[in-house]
Length: 85
Image (cartoon, rainbow, N blue to C red; front, side, top):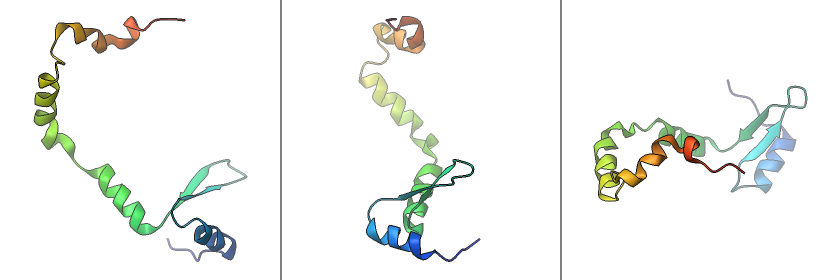
């Protein structure tokens, strides 16, 4: 669906060319973000990237960094080891 941008929103978008514009629906209290379509496509593509091909490299890097050290095992169950206030 394509809609013509009302003058009020056009003015807001023009005055904030670098940052996305947040819009609140006063009835539903839902927030929306208005940004240029090119920026949306860039973000969408980044979110859809399949990183599974990099898993083996990520694991190898973590092992070189010492994540296989038994002392790091407490991070597997962080909540159980987290100090309480």
